[in-house]
Image (tube, rainbow over all chains, first blue to last red; front, side, top):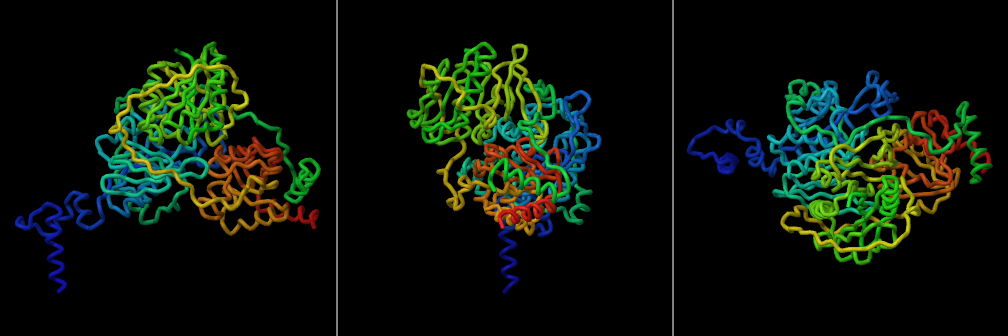
Length: 303
Length: 325
């Protein structure tokens, strides 16, 4: 009986995808169909086209030195990585794709070195990438940057745009919200959980002091994902191999012709002044530990 | 009006502390600029309970509408955009809360401006404000300026200004009713809720030993736990540790966890991101143990040991045990 079942399934497939059986298309043609139709027939619900914004930043434990002009840091000796909050946005996008089908596109603004982080996103499972190339990232403030990113993805007509909560370097924490406004999409931030629904998305927002709230947004929408909500995956060897053949479309930021008049400029970068006089206890671990115990006993008086 | 407009934040008719800090910031900025400050609060009927008229303010605007009773970015943005167009301030200040992070960048975009977020200090030089912010998780600071046409938008970090410094006075209050279209409010919110009640009240502890990323693996946690036990203190953690499930959420200290002020707070392998610092910088004494001498935790620490926690912590536990027996 199984062949009957297969035939019925086959017929249903044709109906769902709008390709009439009378045209006599062999099933292999299904491969060429629009991916949304293809996934619907596979019973995966509605797939989504998801854009994930990633930023490349110096690795977390970098020793930072100021540049000569005191306006930024010396970048020459630094190693870079995907901004960790964005890695969580990427992870959420990949898991949504695995559950509902669709496509994950990594979007990254930055100089040429950012290609390395883009490759990493592709190796982890993003399908393709858009690199908004700006060799002097300092020239764009958050508004101009969001304008460039929004312009670069407008034509993609994504269902969902995900960002991390903030960047580890500048920490403005607003690129996604500004993009949403520019693209006319609703948004929500500090998202702990994402539930895909028909034409909408139900998300759990973190509020302050241990409070949470579910809200439902129509699609397309922009979400800023809270860090730490899922375990991050590593790129597999196969993933790294595959990434080499995936498409990276490079767009020069200047060619996007967005308004780049700055609204906020950084004038000076400097080492923070210590708020307190810190007594650094020197010596071998045992000696330093012993000295700390003395301090806790006679100065803080808690032991 | 020109001047400074402070947007305060309330929940169920109660202002949060950061709103008072931002009023203090707004008053200081207005004074330094030789202008005046006004304040606004938005919400539904619960705004009846808010009284800002006892502060030294030019005016208090109560932005009231049924669609503002439950916070939604679309409604708050539209309502405050209308208020700002009417009041026409030069500077709009917000407390840097989760809610502000959610809508203020959208609001600023409507005025072709960027939000200068999470400022730690404001000062006036040559007649214009300089906004100080932290970069690289607090490792560096930056001074910035607002450009382009007013209004300019900035938010103020928790604890950057003191609520007690908000100057008292007498202010006139007026209700501002925004024109809001229910159809343009796209998000459907559900009622806020709290997850499992907290079993551990860290705020009552005299001694807290807190562990961060530097511990590297879950299996290493007992090392720090033994120190907490030897000291008779509570074990706490920074967010990444709780996110990884290595310790339960109720042991988390920081902006998304508990705020503590023990007699001594021992931060082990915690770099001191601002989200953590806001939860513990009120501690009477702070000890930092970290391998990175440049970690921001040392900026708030009274005592520091720069080195390998895997050597220092066991030595410390031993030394404490010797005294405590």
